[in-house]
Image (tube, rainbow over all chains, first blue to last red; front, side, top):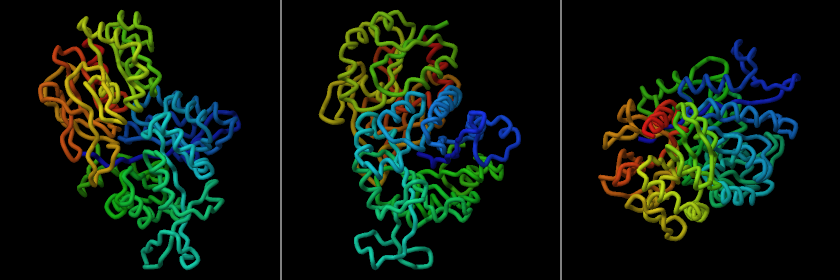
Length: 273
Length: 202
């Protein structure tokens, strides 16, 4: 039986020495190591199904360092690796895949130029093109009759607006319509983050997660808001997600990937253990 | 040390396969040269992407592949590299494969299940084979594909369920050409063990 995937996400940045560190890591030994490769190995040993690296510097100076991190990870960790952050062109994608990543995640660049999704999925295959969609709830439904209106937990009607530049800029684009479009353009997977939940520990944003999971033929990875294993369970049962991405609960040592999977297995969610 | 050649026909991420085989103790090279391939102890046919592109890119190596396979030495096709071992595929327009194993490549039918079939799924070993030495039945391996191989029971080494049962690993009639729909190089320790087993077969 196909299992639900648990995907730890690592934010990778540059430190003053030019090395790489993982933001928000509280493991003393890992902070000292300052090395995302060590953390990737640890999550792999805990039973992570895939890994995501987000390059949060996303600058050209940072790219070389990121390539080095990808290469060293791919040489030691034999599970799928997705890399996102600041990917703007076919050449960026080529470099990252060549370094050993299996998929790239494209966000802002896809909104600015949707054709990048079409072109890159034709060249590299749909399976390696993930579209990251960041969105925010918008309760102005009367002024937006062309949007897909969903019902929030308390019954309030709202649509979900795509945001870019890490949530700093609203686009006026409807997230459901956008997801369908990138599926048509050839994207193989959606990484959905609700900015209303990101970092809150309140759990996934269920209404939008469920809507996308039901509407799309391609897999949906739920992201943003996980505070405990129950949230992941709800993302699969209520949100119907295919995979769950989480950062803080794993980084801060509250739960291991294995803890989460054992919790899910006890509740009859198929997981790889 | 066994000399394993990964055929480079311009598709996909070869680094993980390369490192996985190195991990298994092989001397590995990536090549598109027929002579290098014919001198190898074992050959890997990798591949991600579209069937038609793969067949177009591999056109010039077809003769060498057939000669290599005729020598009886082992070859392992992975994912699309498995699919092109077959007679033909319905991906894009009906396209002939290498014809090393009887059967066709077909798409998952439209259903409630997501396509591509992506993630970790368990395999049922249907024939004992050195590739699976030390691999428990029901082990999880990583898949990402929209098409699968439809072949006869005697050519199937392992099966997998996704809405229906399909071939997760196949073998030719003479027993030296095997293919896996899943990615051993992305299947953690289980996959590394299979690569190790393959190197031992060579």
